[in-house]
Image (cartoon, rainbow, N blue to C red; front, top):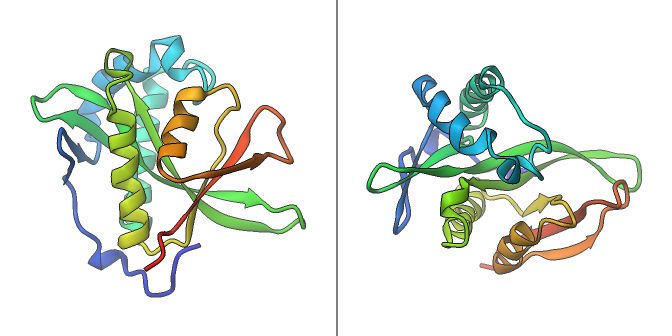
Length: 185
């Protein structure tokens, strides 16, 4: 849930930088590069979304991210190395979470996806740390809740490095629920 004092107009504006990356909102003309890097390799899309998507679908996602940016003041962004190479994407996504008591809450997940040539180089963690810090410092979220595939060891490792705790997903035995609490101030 978003803290009541959250004001989208006061958020830091992109581009966002890490030691090695520049993250910026996707532009319409990024679609082909992003599609080639993230959507044509079955190992990259194996867990998310779990099936191949088309270039048209990628263009739709880029449009959806622009809508989220207008709605929340932030959205998933593309991650480029400072030399200009496309590395992947990351951001915060809102979704409806089904609680055990039958209620639904709006939760946010930190998401990240890295093109295969850049795997095992720390980029996913670098992207995820940027967005977790953004979530807690600027949006003032109390927690992030992520539901990775139980078999996705790399993603679970990133979440573990961010301080997540894990529990079984009561709705889907193929996923687990990772919760990252806001740091104590």
